[in-house]
Length: 171
Length: 171
DNA sequence: ACGATTGTTGAAACAGTATAACATTACCCG
DNA sequence: CGGGTAATGTTATACTGTTTCAACAATCGT
Image (cartoon, rainbow over all chains, first blue to last red; front, top):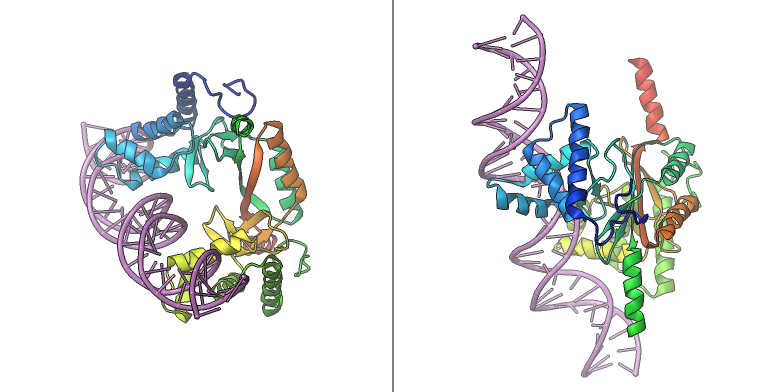
């Protein structure tokens, strides 16, 4: 579940990144195969880039990288790939950042909750059913039929809080 | 608390709109006075426009309306006003729509939860402490210090669900 | 194998959202 | 009044995302 073993939802600082990208790709392949969705070269590249960055990445950053290895890439190129990946739950869009990030659990399409560290730009995806249920229940009380939840929390992650505390002591 | 009396968080279809805008403006005035913040003519107009629309409104829509009554309005004109209003908790930004809407409870700056109807574009602001607390608790467990919550739920409001059902029976 | 259908990509232009940078004016306080 | 700060004017630009149409490739039924 949490390939980093830290239990914080954030990737550990020194984790085996190549392996983590490879694992994500294998999951994506499996998901697409199961649904007869075509994970083309382009889509795969965008997916890999998102995982390689391992932090929220903007469409035009992806576009720049695409262009460097493939002439003729244009905005629709990257947005179409992103749309496909979003549709299949392989990535998420962080609305508060206008950025995209790989999904840690692409088995079933879903919307999790995101903790976004403002210091180091790392993101933890929570998928806490309690939170989602509470929102659903409240909406239901009001007669509101939920289609989609966007839950994004910005702040400071544990690592950065520590680092900040240490700087504080030094000063 | 809920000036509409519907209890759904959504404004009632036939509520006294002029009064509702006037009330909001009075609250804004009071908040700014208490903080020595200057609710200038421009800022007041943007605030009024947001309340008059009574639904999520885009920056460039506001700009168009500003221009019609005030030559020389440019993007920064409206964005600066929006920044001021956001800073003082008088309005909210809906990240998932890139749109802005008046805050129903501007006494203390805060971030509520939003139910966004995809059919009629109406928005309910919840401010449910349970939801906020649960998110805070979960983040705290992971050592994450929360600065800001963005919780936006899209779907169909009770009125539109009913209307849809009726259309369904007719068909 | 064949064409029809559908899905994917290429390419150019465009629409919508937001900020940078700098000049100018209005306001407040001593 | 003078001097400083906050607010606005103005121009330009950066960033984010869509529309459109044409070309190409995979799939499917026959």
